Image 1 (tube, rainbow, N blue to C red):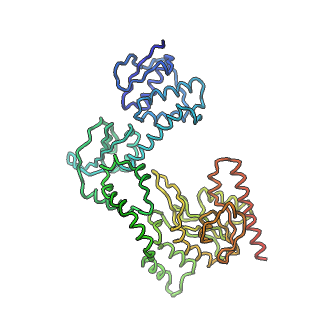
Image 2 (image 1 turned 90 degrees about the vertical axis):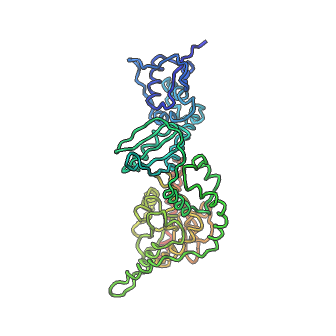
Length: 477
C-alpha cells in the first residue's frame, strides 16, 4: 500500500507557494498519488521545506500562466491538479496543455476561466464611497469575490486610481493604496451598510440614462452581473423598474420621430460660408452635417464620426460596414487590420487606392467594452437605416461608375434589403439605378481559422476586385 504524505496548503497560497511545494515534492520524487494537499491545515505529516539541492523546474510559459490563474481558484483540489499536470510535463508530456480533451487540462482551463471572470466582475462591480479616516479622505469599497482574486485584481485599481487613497475589503483579504504604494492585509467581515446618498444617486442616474430597453436580455444580464453583487451596487435599485417598463419604452421609441440634428450643426454650416458669403462645397457640408448626426445612439460612445475619403471624381466607390477600433481613433476608413488586407488586395488587383473613394455604411464605431478592449459589434437595422442618408449623399455627389459592396451590412444599406453575399458574390447588381458589385468584407478573411481556406478566399477577393476594375474600364470606353 502506497504511503501518503500530507502537505498543508494555506488558503491564500499563490504562485510562490505552489512553486515552493512543487520543487520540494519533485526533489523527493513524490508521485501525485503519494501527496495529499491539505487545505484545512490539520494533521500535516510532511513539511515541504525546499532542499538545498532541489532541482530547477523548467515549465512552459503556457503552464506558468495557467498556474497564476488556477492557484486563485477556491477549489480544494487546485494544488493537486496543478502538481499532477506539472508531474506529467516533467515526465515528458511537454504538449499536455495542448490536449483540449484531457480531463486535467479541461478542469484547469475551467478554473482559469472562472478566475478571469471573477477578476472582471471585481473590476466592473466595485463601487467606492468616500470616507474621512484619520483626518484624510479615503475611498472604501466592499466586494465579495467567489475566488481568491484580490491580489490579481488590485493592480488594475492602482493604475486607474493612482491619485487617490483607497481600500478594498473582501472576505479573503484587504488591499490598500496609500501614498502611491499598494499593501495587502487580512480578511474582514462584511461591514454594515453605509449609504452615500450623493454617490449612489450619481451611479443610479448614470445607469438609468445609459440603459437601453431595446437591448435588454435578462438572462444574459444576470449571468454577467449576479445578484450577489447587487447590494454594493447602488444603480441596481433602479433595475426592477427598468426591466418592468422595458417593453413600453421600446414601443415608445419605435413610434417616436427621429431627433433632428442639434442647432450647432447649422451654426457650423453658417461659419463655413466665409467672408465672401460663398457656400462650402457640397461634400464638406455633408460631412459637417454627418458630424452632428444624433439619429442613433452610436455617436455617444464612439470617439468620432468617420466619413469617407478619396477623390470626388472617382469612378469606383468601396463601401464597408463601419469603422473599427483604429478607424474610430484615427478618423479615417480602412486603416486597421482589415484595411491592411484591403490595401494589399487592391495593389494585387492593380487598383490605386488613391484613385478610389472609400467609405462605410455606418459612420460610427459600434462596440462592446471588455476591460480595456473594444470588441466590434455588427450594426443593426436601426443604425444602418439612420446612416443611409449620408451614404446616399456621398454616392449622389461622386456619381461613380461602380460601387463595390464589401460585406452584408454594406449590401443591406445599398439594396435596402438583406442580401446573401455568398450567393451573389462577384455579380454586378443594379440597385437604385447604381451598378454594384457584391463581395466579402476584408475582415471576413481575417476570421478564417484554416490557413488554406483563408488563402483561397483571399485569392477570390482579389479576383472580385479585378473584375470590378475591368468593368469600370469598359464602362469608361
